[in-house]
Structures are given as structure tokens and as C-alpha cells.
Length: 113
Length: 112
Image (cartoon, rainbow over the protein chains, first blue to last red):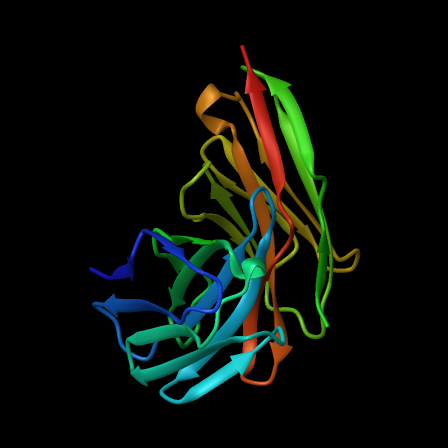
């Protein structure tokens, strides 16, 4: 069966510090991978979308970046965090061909102080 | 670009029926999905409509009208555990292909 792992679950970081959030998927190949951000009580904002290794689409200009060094690994990074980067970050995957259901990780609650 | 509109809040009592509407605009259409998210948790998939009509899954049903760019989620026999946020989602073209875009969500509060 397929599983998705996202860590850490919570993170408190000072302004200006770097960020690295990791997401891995098991039990499937060639998944589409997503990073979303959710502000408190708000919707899911698409940040990055990837259909393959090294293929990253950025939806919103910001100080965040994403990388996909391996087929089932998706990393969200920042060189210098801003207060506005606080939020609930969710990684998700779906089958690369013909999939219509996305499966989410448990999320990382990031607080920038 | 893509955009989705859904009500921000809906309230209902146990045992009632509630309908959450969603209208969308997207360049290309690959189906309308619904997700449920309990407070602090991850969204989970509820249903998917690629074609017009009603899809039923237990107490939940989802409807799509492609000509109207409209769909809804119908929740019957409401239970307290149905209190959650509900998101509609569509696929839209972007640089890499067709990414899943979510609406802002509808918070459903079920009271006894």
C-alpha cells in the first residue's frame, strides 16, 4: 500500500533562518507531488507541483523553493524565513497517470517567530 | 487561471441535510473533487465527478453540471463528526501540466 511521510509535525523557527521540509512517498512510482500552504482557517494554497524528477512548477512567487531529487522525495526550502511564512504546510501525492485522488501527509505546522 | 467559489460557513443540526455549492472557472476541465478536513488534520478525499450527474457514496453525494461550471456536495443524516471544512477542487493547466487547485473551503458546524 502507498504511504506518505512528512516531517517534522511542528516547527518553530526564527525570522531569517533557513527551512527544509521533507516529504517522501512509498509504494508508488512516478507520482505527481504537491506542496500546499494553509493559513489558519483558510484554504489550501498551491505552492509547488511536480510531475517528475527535477520538474517543478511554482504557483506563487515567494521566498520558498522546492526540489525533487528523487522520484518519491519532495523538499520544500527557504534560505531566509519571513513571519508571513507561518502556516500549515501539506505535502500530497497522486497517481501520475489517470489519478484523481490526492493523498495528503499529516502536515507541518510552521511558526516563524 | 483557475478560481473556485464556495460559501465560507454552513451550520446545521444533527440529522439534517446540507448542501455545499461550488462554482469554478478553469482553463480545461478534468473533474471536480471534494475533500474533508477536520481541524488540525490533513484533507481526505470524499468524491470525484468527471461527468455530469450525481455520485452517491453512503451519506455523501456529489453533483456536477459542466455546462454551469457548478457542483455541490450533499451531506445527509448529519452527525456531529461531520463538523469539518469541506473543499472543492479542480484541475487547471499550469506550466507543468494539470495541478489540483482547491477552493477556500466551507466550514460546516453541526450542532445537536
